[in-house]
Image (cartoon, rainbow, N blue to C red; front, side, top):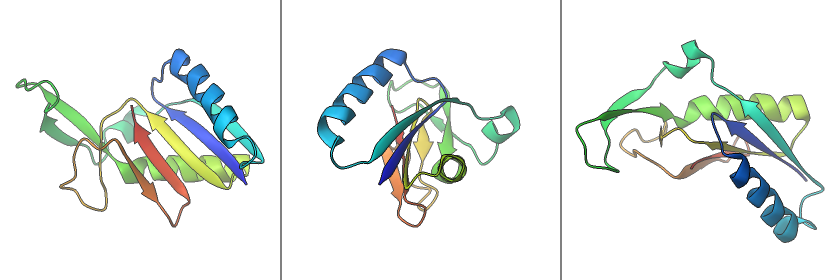
Length: 123
């Protein structure tokens, strides 16, 4: 089974090296190969699609935050899975997300899509 970890947006390089170390230690015998696909960015026109503007609940300010729908990331991850011939895709992003399947679920840490064999995690 081949796992691809796709970095969407700005993800810190220190987190990348720690993640690589822990995945290699934990899942070395489970995955045939673990590929790290870096620097995948959202195109500006895609960034504005289907966003929700919500109050920032994390710091209780009046500032609003743009939340991205999880389906947007599933499409990117599915394309990368096909391009790199991966079995499972995991997306990591620094962008706040909301659930496309239940739009009342805001500021998610992550969500999985079984049909596409992928997941998105917001750091």
